[in-house]
Length: 318
Length: 268
Image (cartoon, rainbow over all chains, first blue to last red; front, side):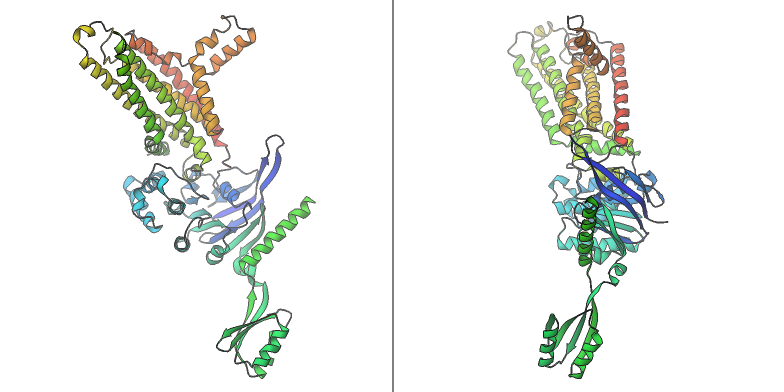
């Protein structure tokens, strides 16, 4: 059973009061997320990430299409018992303390006062909220509210957790703690679906990603698959090469970087066979340190997808 | 504990600490105390003035709390997006509406109880400082328990105002909800006049409009028994039950309508 499954999920709004015009926030989204995986939902601002999460939480209703979580329709109360959700820039009740808020939410999952309080206390420890837990939430900074938001999302030990921009507002330490928390959730079998436009987080955490641009899915799959065939050059590192050989190489290639202690990094274009260059260097007395393909990063891939998506949309409009 | 009661408890905890409510209740208590000073300026009418002003203050402040915290139940919760985390929990939207309503009703009852205690304390003080020969001229004792009937009906009225605020806030903004709720409150207090527009010589169209408004909007006049309790006139149990019953029916209809609207609402 998939943790999350969507089929042709679409959401249209109308914009404008006097002359309403249709606006496609999400178009025909079909994807699957397996149990126990960290799935990154990435895209630029306004791509439709939050719209998708709202549809999965049934905060909004789809124009067409269908979504299931843990094999049941979204919005089913039984499903909600097994999921957690952190909204983007969460906001809670000003006059409740962090502790009270978590106990309040815990009770909705059927935990008694004592069990709810124990869970709240443990989770607040886990997200780094100390004595402030007894302060009213109106006194909390944005980062502290975000931490409380993460704690409430996992108060019920969910099987699937939805995190909308979970790193937003966190300092570097907080980001690291949340990354570790996400990995711990994955290790205990929880599926984590998180949206972000911070690609480094997705690169570190996700087994699979989906790229959304202007409401349309432009790519989805394992990071290793998406980036595997996208080597853009070879990086050859040699040591002990003579000066004139390096100068000669510099005249032929754009990137020759000294690495210190007599080592040099040479970036060879894919059109050139690295073996030929390597044999020339070895004949001149140089030693091979390493030879690696220079792969595209997720950022390169993402930028390319966004540009392609925008070009497609412009073509469709014209 | 059911989801409705959990939400109600959360709302009570949150709104009982609301600064607006604190300040308003404090203001009401201050008004009641001030009415004591004002009453000193009148000859022989002081007890009636205090009773009258106290009940008016409790009503006005209660309505303000019901409207301004009532609209926060849903409209502000949607605007600030605090509803997102709550709605994703194992709770239906109808349970959310009902829980919110019960929570605020409980808050209003608590606030009204504080005002009633302050009211009786002021009246008890008046009773204590007034010579016995002056008291002989009073229509009823200062701390007349029948005044509680007026408080009870104020409570019923506030619960209705809360339901109206809740209904409007399921589909409109905070500002609009507040304005519409206050409009319903005002219309509700002129129910009899609206019905009698035709007899007062208004045009047929205006008279019809008046009758429509009278039947659509709740009639709040029977809930105001201030004049009766202040002047020691009887307020029968039958009147209390009829007034409460018709309002309860209206509240139930409003809550059902609010739940139906809310069930299919998109939180953009």
